[in-house]
Image 1 (cartoon, one colour):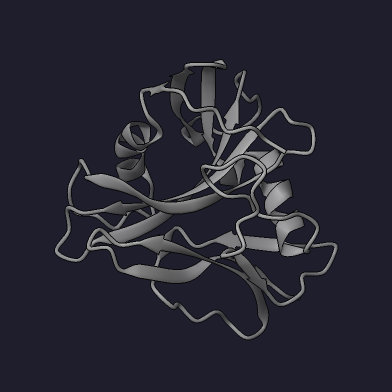
Image 2 (tube, one colour):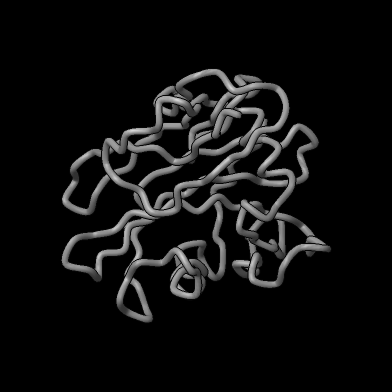
Length: 192
């Protein structure tokens, strides 16, 4: 199980996402600089213990209606070779672990392997800020096959979004800036 360190990160994950998010094709905001607040998420464990894995939900409060995004992230102690340059969200100085390279998890093979394991029921989602604590609010609906998983991360979240009946889907919650709780589909698997 991954240990959660109570320390600083400079810049913070939200600060890094503020600069990175507007450059993504799926960003729906109309300002170049979103105002992001952390709104939810969960973690997965890397069986090798080398990569930190977090699915963070952030809400952009600049629009008339706030917009929630999910960003899977892989935290590494060294640069990841062989992936597109835009996959790097940024680097940050961790108060305990030193420099962390933070990647968009859809491009990180360890993050995606663990997401597939979660969708197959082979791993347990962990609380975002407590060590060794399962997050029982994160649920998988349906049963994913053991091979050929075509996983789609839903970057822009919608409350109570209905998944296709023919897919396996991952549901988790977040909190809107006004304190209202929401749940939606973070990822789906298209069954062949």
